[in-house]
Image (cartoon, rainbow, N blue to C red; front, side):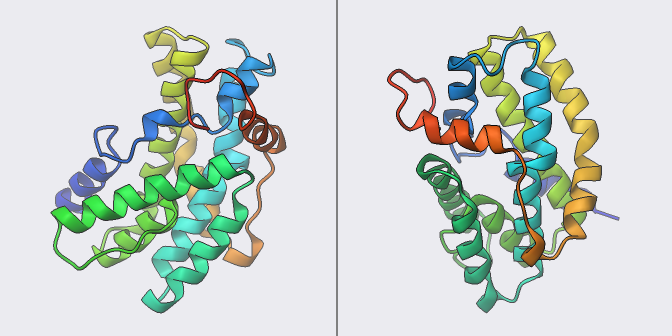
Length: 214
């Protein structure tokens, strides 16, 4: 059972106010919308696929591996996370957010300096060092992941605020089960099946006009 202090720390770490710059990235969604692969009617299905089959699920596997790894093994998990990035922008997305997360946690909470790592690896490693429950860490990470992409969708589609919150509510309901599934998978069985989202992330790199960095 998580303590109140553990819940509050994770809530702060995964808040939109935590300075990792998540608002600047769309995970390829901008390109998909620009090319009419996604519309207001299908954006929820797109986000659900990324959360349950793509980057969200794979990130949860990486988070768990980093949490369970010895400190000397975390760099190996990070190397796999970098290799899993399907595009240069997606690699920059996870590295820049992870570096910002590690820097802020190191500056605010005692426990030593965290290295610059991919975001889910940094969170998993920090969660272990700060003795936070793995299942809760993974679940709240997935909820924050879904919230960031829903926020991007609300600006890009655009979606009304109530519609966006309704979508996020339904995605949030999936997070505990996605986390449970991801925590049961060994790192050597990691995969991603959201191919359209990965291709969209690649195509975004050459998109002429853009609001987001990925």
